Image (tube, rainbow, N blue to C red; front, side):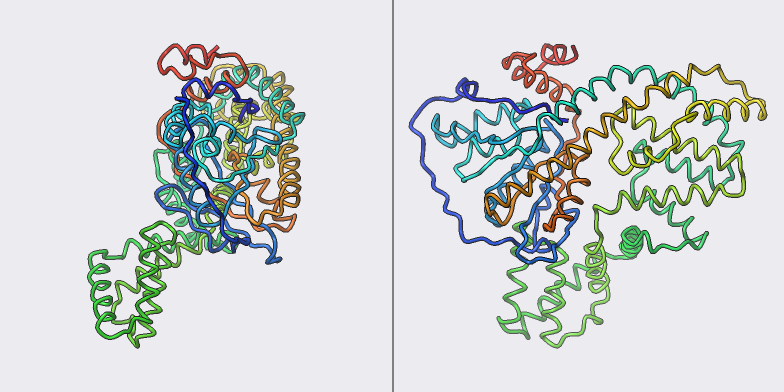
Length: 525
């Protein structure tokens, strides 16, 4: 989570070469709230994962952009996404987590020309001191309002709860390691072959040893074997169907048929038919339209020209694949995947009481591990809330020791489970404070939109808060789109920690900006 944003006045001059500022005026057009289904994001920078249209066509649109704090590659992509929204949808209001009230930095524009400001701001962006929206407010000449939506009291409460959780975290490691080790020994002896296969695939997926498509195929094979009702997993079903369709595609044949169809259209169709197709192709290249939209336009052009797509079967199948993928609500996939995994774990272990109990313990272990690492997403935290807390960890110990003895396995004695159980509420306090922040931030988003009358706003928010705030904004009658920037692959933990220490006043700026062991060692303190 962010530390509270600090005032930057004075520090930015360090890197700027003072000179006469170059004046570049941006005059916004007349924009109204766009239909969220028409929002596009350049594919090289990120993707649109959810859209929720309000029943009120006059409702403002909030574009929630999930970010990875202090990750340079992510911040560059977020910057590009914001520019795209500014230039194509009239974005002027940017609402941010981690700050309260006016956060504008445009006063730095007087200290240099755009190239000079860009050069200076880039260094701060790399160091994690500036975020993408702050970079734009300094380096560009677009009229932006940066507004913090935090309640500082709740933020500090959340921060204190995190610090307390971090102090207790290490005390859980030995017990969780012992419990996991005992469960691993029991799995092949207690679980059925199908249940064991599912658990092994689940482990591989969580450890990033199996990709999403392969894991989903494993799950769906069990779904089909059990003849399960799939109505609660519609987006997963679409993904499975489109993935299987993709495997049957011959992309060389698709390309050949596409070229042949376009050539035929050029010979037989007029400009009235070809113009929309040409415009859509240009929009795809510019990143303002999706591939599926081009192929939909191509099918429309063929129909207008009296050409049956049945004569181009590979192209027709490819277009169907793209259209099917486009209907998937990516934001729903994670929740559906978690629910389906839980349902299959129960279904595949239902014939064995010991197997069913072991699978339940494995699920609970995942929740407790995520809880103490403060990495549970909101939906999983709510699952933790529903667990009976009294005797939870000691119940694991009793079952694992009993079954290990029955199976002739030797396990070392467990550490004190009752003392650990007593500490669980202190971890829960972190999540409860975060959920209170969600409510406060959603209220402040609504208030700022009402105050400014802006038809569209970007909300820069961390991944934990995005689902809850999205739901709360929908309940208040707003349209919401969720965007995920492409993230970098590098470990940015040292940069992030150094930036946090600086923002808390615990690390000098020059050490944050200087790469290497010195800043990392200071950040670890």
